[in-house]
Image (cartoon, rainbow, N blue to C red; front, side, top):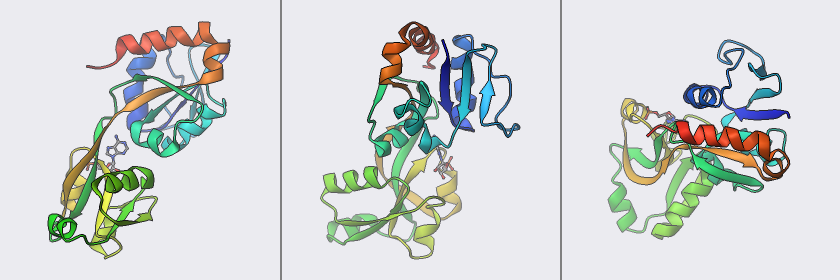
Length: 213
Ligand code: AMP
């Protein structure tokens, strides 16, 4: 039975290779060097589709892919409709943080009840975080390089993913609040899981056995 797996290029793809190998699946090409969006594997009926990270849940939700791998950040922003999320793969780990310019006194601004401008690619996560804290915010949605926003006066703070912290440091920013630990999860189309159970379940089991500690 045919199986389609949605993946994004870069870190998620690299860190998914050992999990695919555990399930006996080997991509025929490297999406970094190939321009192909549909990648064949050593199994005639298993294909990988290479999509933007934030589009993975959508492809799986509508059944264009049976399985996918997406970050917790992306899944929260998507909402998770139609997706079964059986497994935290513990890959592409990082943290969702609030960060400000080194010369901005975040604590004082919060204490004084200032209304903060927050630039982010993750409006849902940011809105929930500040609502929980009781801080009034204006969310400014960006699609890239949030680190620039506080430097040019577009925002007081950003909500972004932090891994090594090097990007913040290089731009004179510092993390002031931890919101969530992020890692990538396996998502499965709910209808596909029922209809293709005998094909999908062994892949889920193999992934589960190969999750890094
Ligand atoms: P770093 O300099 O290592 O802290 O990386 C920060 C930059 O990489 C930011 O622009 C983040 O948006 C991005 N980033 C870090 N970790 C991840 C991840 N797991 N998934 C997607 N983007 C990430």
